[in-house]
Length: 101
Image (cartoon, rainbow, N blue to C red; front, side):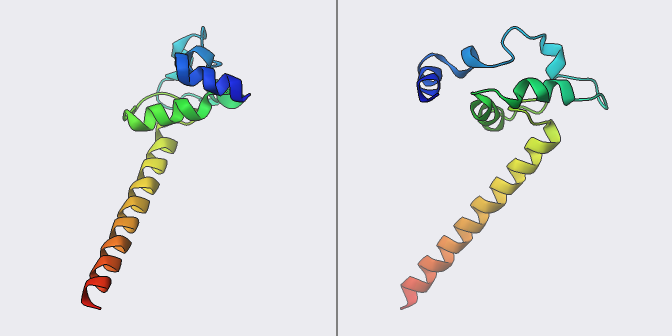
């Protein structure tokens, strides 16, 4: 499996995606429509994390990416932003504490 991941890095993760050749409309359902079928395609995909990270890094707002819906990806982006903010605040507090000692 590591060989697959290494190859995915070299040639592009999309080449190894389960969705390759699947109708893209499946991954962009109408508002309120089921996402279950698209998520099933993603379920066992070896590049699912790469796909998700691509969507998160590029601000993909629509469709199923890495097995997650827009709402699910928004939740991850908020959690990551909060974690970054908390880390920066902790770093600033630590630096300020060290300066006065």
